[in-house]
Amino acid sequence: MKLDTTNLRYLTSDDWSVLTAVELASKSHYLVPTPLIHKRSKVRSPSAVTKSLWTLSKAGLVGRIPNAKYEGFRLTYGGADHLALHAHSKSGAVFAVGNVVGVGKESDILAVAPPSTHNSRGEERRGEKRGKRGSGGGEGTQRGLGDGSGNGSGDREEKDVQYALKIHRLGRISFRRIKEKRDYLGKRHSSSSWLHLSRLAALKEYTFMTALYEHGFPVPKPIAHDRHTIVMELIEGFPLRQVAEVPDPQGLYGELMEMVLRLARYGLIHGDFNEFNVLVREDAVDSGEEGGLEREVEKLALDEGKGNRSTIKLTPILIDFPQMVSMNHPDAKSYFERDVACIKRYFSRRFGFTSDEPGPFYEDALETVGRGGAKMLDIEASASGFSKKMAKELEAYLKETGGDSEPGGEAAEGGNELEDDDEGELDSELDEELEQ
Image (cartoon, rainbow, N blue to C red; front, side, top):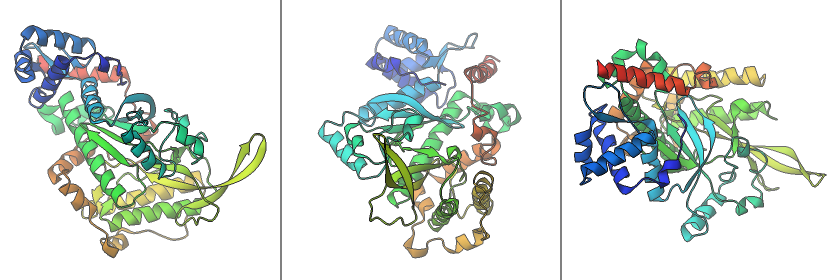
């Protein structure tokens, strides 16, 4: 579904209380009875509750079911989106929502702006963002992520900082397999189930992103998390799948394999390591700076019709972590080998590069776990709030609905994106079941 924030500024305190009440009661009711909404919202006047429900229903934030056995309302994805954005706004993480910058298999990514960078808090954030090359800015569109404005030049200082808002929408792709997989969700086969699973996916991604960022991995900086949404650093770059050629395929291939092995040393396997989940960012390089793992290339920059050469380096950034598993997972070997094989296959097909060296192999990577004082980030993530029970529930969803199928397939290409009519079809199926 498309995010429409028009109603955010017009909702009253009673409207938010009623919408929150519907959300809380949705944990045990797909269709929340109206009397229960009144009780949970703590709005004194029944007429005020009725008025708020009418307003929310008109805005598409709650839904009604014709011919249901009792009068009630259900929470929609739009309602959940508004609750999350309201929370981000109150916490100071998000001030304004911009354009869509990406659409994943089961997520949407939008450019968002924090509160004004002119106050003390904003200046602190802006200074923090300037400390990382290529980490802010952008024009709020997919083109603006890498159209030449993100090369570390000084004109970025005149722009407001932008973040990325990722909204998890589990069920958007996999709902088409529901008829074949009904045993998994059973009676919980409802929009509340999808929202619950989307919350788990967002919590897992934020937890692992935070752990990876704190240990120096090239991932977006996590800013905030609420419900099924994450606010993070907006990376100025392109997905690897959109890059037609690179100056040094062997060097980039080596960096990505080193990233796989480094994850293993910290006890983790990405689980979906492919060209869709690697961003390539251009960073400016000082004339005397050494590249390290990052490759330096020469780029011709045109300045008022004159050709001036400036040195940049291409930095791979890893994204998307809901499929991440531990090196101790029962299927760890197959996940590890799939990640490696996916990169090998893509580089051979796109760049015509095939490594002369075999591997890396899971058995060798397993021996390096914890080496050099590397912490077990899977244990750290569990201690941070993403429990083993949550991990099992999310993993069961991915397996039963095909969410962990071979990377780079039709769904990853965008061929299975949910259309509005399809989402309506899912809601209709659920409503018919409730009527029966």
